[in-house]
Amino acid sequence: MEERVELAPIRYVAIGDSFTEGVGDEQSDGSVRGWADLVAQGLADSTGQPIQYANLAIRGRLLAPIIAEQLEPALALEPTLLSFNGGGNDMLRPGTDMPWIIEQTEKALRRILETDTEPLLLAGANPTIGLPRGESVRAKGNELTEAAGLLATELNVRFCDNWSDPVLARREYWSSDRLHLGPIGHHRVATNVLHSLGHFHPEDWQLDAEPIGAPGTMAQLRYTREHVLPWIKRRLTGKSSGDGRTAKHPDYVWVYPRLVDPHH
Image 1 (cartoon, helix red, strand yellow):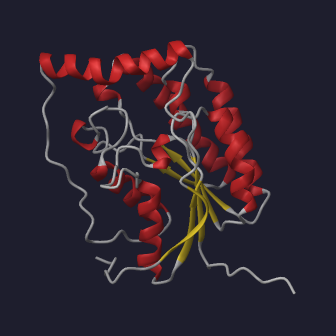
Image 2 (tube, helix red, strand yellow; image 1 turned 90 degrees about the vertical axis):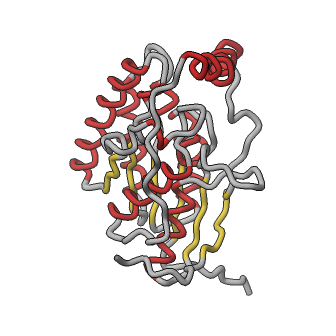
């Protein structure tokens, strides 16, 4: 007789790139946590019930591989909630085909809606205050976020718009590479997500970062040497930060509620 696998009332699966994997929220053991892990914990804390959580996101992934490699494995897990974010790495490259990104996003959402899974569409936070060629990326992000919002309304899908959050656009919420949120930034995104799902965030989370000023000349040179030039080298050699990496939680892990009152 085949053994029946126990399923939790909430089964949350996240797909995407480094934003969803959690890069920038590094832990002492070298792993990354990030907003999706925090959302899983927040859902458990808010409901007082254990939930199941999987995260198939891999850093560096463009939108096409996210959809081709992660969407169907995610749906095969029969989640009750599937968060979807992609296109951020596409926007960092010149000649981004924005209509194609929007079209593929719609196709992915419609595929999720064919199942019993609830989709959650996310816009990533706006990193452009610290990026070279930030104006170009900002224009693309504005276009994609507006289109995503309209698409979510059309399909009656929940949409968590982090791009338009003015707090997350400030320097102090980003890690040293200026491209990935820092720990407090990930907590703020997780809070936005939980609120969009109708849940409170745990009151022990730190959500406010100390303001920092614009970098000086030496800091800017160090940033260029440590982060910009390696990024350019990867582009020129066709490499990705995610090469050789696999998902951190390809199958469900159990997340248990903590003894913390999530209500305010």
